[in-house]
Image (tube, rainbow, N blue to C red; front, side, top):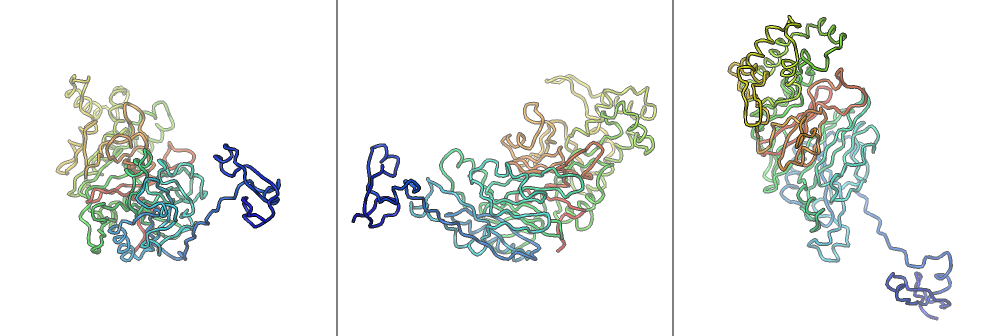
Length: 519
């Protein structure tokens, strides 16, 4: 009797030979003694790999109305300052702290060879681990069972149809946020990653270096309100682990009132078509402005330009609708837009970003024959004269005053409103907020991705579809999610962006007139 050198390893009669099990052994022609069973045609030639079944972490989350969700990498130390602040925040908010585990094998990490093969998590997060799929409400699913490579550049790619019509949260250390088009009448669908509570621990490769740079020390606050939910980002200070969520600052020292926000960048306003519920949620009692107390308000597409819309030229039915609703008076629309901003500035500072709808007024002046439009002739001539008096030849060609900016200066009174010039920079907390998003780099059309590759943190607008892509946070719209020029599935959302005193950002979405769950 001899010991079989095949998969079984038993003390059996050795009756046959086969080639060695490893590729190197086979190349050398090495032979090993095996029993008949291991040599049989239905047997494997090599021992099957032993696969350790991953641990399952779950607990009851039914009936919970508020969650703080983050993720943790295996074999990696947690950021103790940040995690302590998370625990304090969860207690203060009455929230359930959920940590989704994710795996990464770092061949260049600091662990020993034995530790690299082990699947374990920092003991601080173990009581909070959760890695099963869970429906948090009728329209939101935590897909904690999904594993995405930690170095993935676009962790949400391919998951648009996952979970069907329900929104979805996926664990990943890079913060990414997308709004997915849905049929009319349904709640908007979002995809979001979580951020991480563990330290940077990735390979010394290109993919690892990029993943380290985009490692988001943070998480999500999710508030359940019946079938609806409200989701916003937590972005921690790496120095002390503290973070601001709305009007509170959380750290290992406790909870305190946060300093006033640096700014609030609002979704495209389109005065005259602004949704009243969105306006109340933003400026009304208990709204974003009252809660955050921002020093600056940032406006995109302030003027809708419906009275001077170049896309309406030649359409007699739109012209008839304008006539019946008295929507053809250009002066009235411009004055209404400026009054709207003045009334809501209320001692703060407002910044009006040059936008494509604001530019409808300049296009109307350049392309309209005032003699054929007696209802707007005087306003046309007044505006054209102001432009004509400022026309000059600059270093790059013709320059003249923007007509909407001109009327803002004439009508704003004592309100602190700064209407930016084209390509004029303006930063809040080191974040560039002067880019509307319609014009991308080097003359290309602006998109969420190409506006993120400029080497600067930016907040943009224009597409009415919010998103987060690396350094670019994009806001949505302040209008209803359906306007006359929208058809088919839509990804529009009523989303603003807060710039906290720490310089960190968070997208705040208004759903059915509410921007947060009742406390």
